[in-house]
Amino acid sequence: MTETTDVQQPTRILLIRHGQSVANAGGIPPDHIINPLTELGHAQAKAFADTFPCTPTLFLLSPYLRAQQTSVPLRQRYPEVPIEEWPIQEFHYLNPARHNGTSEEQQMPHILEFWERDDPSYSDGPGAESFSDFLSRARDALKRLAQLKSDGCIAVFTHGLFMQAIRLLLLFPNATDRQLMSNFRRFHFVNFIENLEVVELEVINGQLRMVGQQHLTSFTLQGETSHA
Picture (cartoon, rainbow, N blue to C red):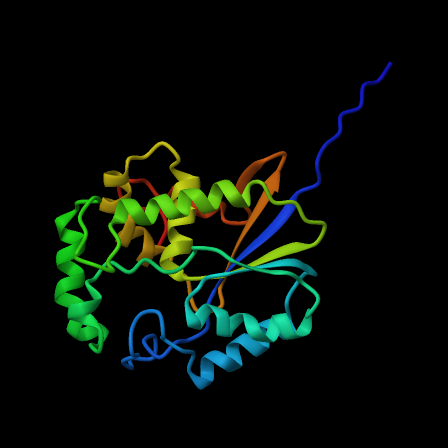
């Protein structure tokens, strides 16, 4: 007698980085939350929606403006699809009181100082997130994503550093926050995520994994990368 098992069909999840923002283009937005898309960013979002590869059943949105604006063309194409806002916003680790109204070039000494400090518990001040707090948000998102089910796909409009945190946590689930922080920027630049680039995940029987990105597993936390 042949036994049969009930195998759950994979749930497809697409993490989508927002289109080009004012800050991406070298401009100075009012702050890291109100950082709107440029004209190019809106065009990128429209082109992305026109060629979206699956039928969405749920939209998950960052609360930040640039991600929400990026989602608009696809939401207009599928107006019946439900929308949820999740805390999947970008990692913002500089004190807003000191850095709002400044360019990335002006912020660079403070950016380098933050990462060279290599302290995942450090916060730069009110409104700034520690690296450990950032990873905690990403871990919570992974747990919630693993519980989702869809016959089509789930479109998640989010941000580059947040997507990198998801990648690293899936690749190195047992790493400490300090290990991940020490290697985060190297990983980010080696595996850079462009505007409107997609990281695909799938859920099978409650287990979440990346799809089609096997090359990322050659990254090691302490050693050199074996790919460029």
